[in-house]
Length: 435
Image (cartoon, rainbow, N blue to C red; front, side, top):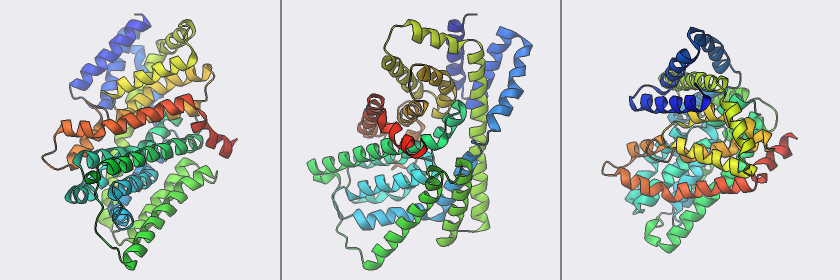
């Protein structure tokens, strides 16, 4: 069977398996091994133990359950609610102030937990009801919470970023540093959009007639300071070269436990529930990593890498056009497949080609992560949409959710184009810190 036909068979089979409702990790592994059995015979099963050992025993991947535990403890510690209350106190009197506060708080939450669920669920539960109760335009409120809550993918410590680094042997510290400037640009895009929208339509984000007391301001500054110190403990140690991502994850896990104690939310029941939830999420990630690694390794051994290299060499296209085609393919995949699967499957295929074309793997990794932040918000599969629908008012229609996210997806696409055309936006800071 030719590698071209094999690729078509693999991806059609994966789509059919996903449509059947089979778990993602099992589906990918099952498709790969069934096709491998027909192509190679029983010896194909030798691929499983070596792939399993190599894919889930990486020291880098050990940081994922630590960051997940940190996120679960923070969700239960009350820091998220306290930070939204601080935003209400400090920015509520500005036109569009609550929306700007959501962007700021979700950015901080993303910098502490590395996944999107915590940001969207916390913002949706705590910030969405007061925004709607105070007359905010529903589309603006839903769009801001979706866009800001999904910043956890792009803001380090991002779990997909860790998976990309492990899959391509790229420095996690450099990836974290490279993501900071693009993340700040995206936050600026969101903020400017809110300000301009509320300036053109004052009723879209009305100011709140509320005068905080000095005590309110002190507590708001305290909560912001706690969040900043935790971010400094996690990211600062990595970017400063003081700790590996795994060690920083351990620091963050301890820090989140201290925060729970500070806010008087810590108990053995909280510790138990946070540990179980983090363990379940880590197990899901591990099975996805294993299934996708089996799929990717089989596809590579059948010649997919050589096929792509041959295409890039024989196409006659300029290198940037090939990079653009890769991005478009991942955007299409993101509409139907989980973002972690795309990273695991596409990173080993695409990154060597990008490097052979003369591009920095760190830069390419940031392009892929920005792409994935678009994927989680694009229908029909984008699961961030379903997070938002779960916390939105019961009368919210899916079509309303789709319309609310359109401007923010456009801004992410603009960021992707900017970083593609101006690589220094991603490469300047890691070169400054690490080279």
